[in-house]
Amino acid sequence: MKKITILFAFIFLMLSCNTSKKIQKQIATGSYDYAIEYAVKKLRKNPDKKKKQPIIKMLEKAYDKAVERDYRNLEKYKIDSNPSVIENIYNTYINLDNRQEKIRPLLPLYIKDENRNALFIFRDYKQDIEDSKNSLSDYLYANAKKLLAKNDKQSARKAYDDLKYLDKINPNFKDVEDLLKIAHFKGTNFVNVVLINDTQQIIPMRLEQDLLDFNAYGLDKFWTRFDAPKQENINYDYQLSLLFKQIDISPERIIETKIPISKTIKDGFEYLLDSNGHIKLDSLGNKIKVDKFIDVNADFYKIHQEKASHIVGEVSLTDLKSNQEIDNFPIESEFIFVNDFGELDGDKRALNAEQLELLNHREIPFPSNEQMVYDTGEDLKQKLKAIIDDLDI
Picture (tube, rainbow, N blue to C red):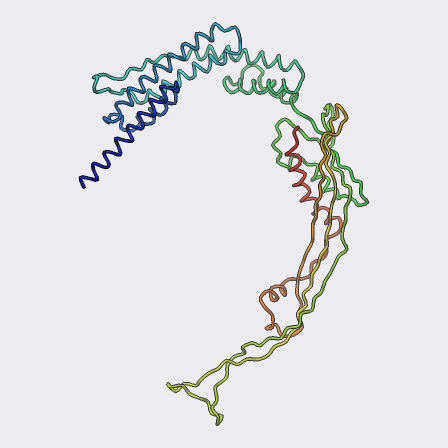
């Protein structure tokens, strides 16, 4: 028992040393906030334990160094003529405030060998945060409007990011909500989708509607909008064409296979007779029964229904500004209607489990050609979605 206690004490000592070394390493490499995060985590539970005394001192040291570095950075930012440093000033004040709020719930932290509480100088940064937030908001707003005035998509997208960030740190600032809509519109690639039927088959109207209903595709393309048909007052950037080149529909096929079956099956029992024709008895005087077998015969007809449709086409993407095709993808899909059922002439007991199951099935009317094309299009939609997902627009 004593050996076990010593072993556990040694393990705890090693873990404590490892924690201290980890925090010390983070401080030595300038990762002050990582050191603070780790130390705070370790001090949340039983901070008064002796083994946690070194952690308290290192937390105190890491905090001082982190605050000192932030103030040095603030001095540099405030003399920098580049207005983009306003965001750095704002984030620095946020970090200063968040850092002390992480430590505040742990206080007081007592350092026993120095007979004092750990010293953490806290300040009220509310006004600094508010002032820098307002300055940053003004900068982001003005910069976004400047970017939107350029009337190019990349600038509009950058403006959108700035406005989104502005709306996060300062909700309901001026007309940011309206500007976000403008930035999104200006940054969006508009794609007109057309369906071209170059076959001798009629494409079902509902399939055409499904293929062109891009709201149902679940596409994750924030900066791309697909329209079919064209919308008024939109200057389209691309045309996405789905060309049906070939639609083949096979004849309806019914294949009947006759399977003759002969089988020996158990059919009850009979009594065992001796050579004189008397029923034999066992040692207890009971009549001896034996299984009775008979031969059964049947003709089983396995009937297979089949009809297939096949669509071949291509998807092309054209840049409407240059009128050049920039991508082309072959696409094809197949749908096969299959139904199997069985019919019997003879003794049902001759059939196996699979044949018995087929007896429960019935003949099904063949789908119309229109239905076959529509069912093929369901698979085509998934392939079209995969192509669109990969488009770099």
